Length: 55
Image (cartoon, rainbow, N blue to C red; front, side):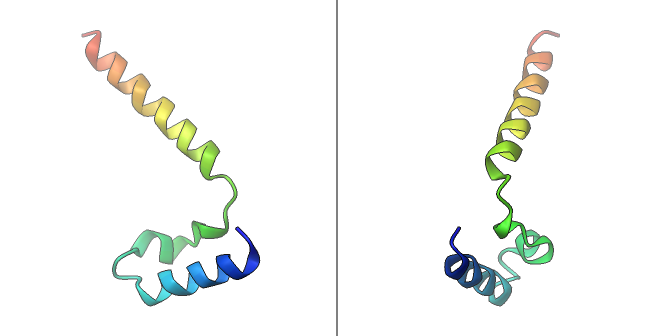
């Protein structure tokens, strides 16, 4: 995110922390690792589902 967009988003989340408590508390909006975290989480989920299916 650009600096101004990141700042605007952070202010919005702070104002609406009751709607976005995890983002407000941890401040992940400025984190550039979203794609990596999503891919790792998806792989973990799919691995778990495949293990359930093989029972």
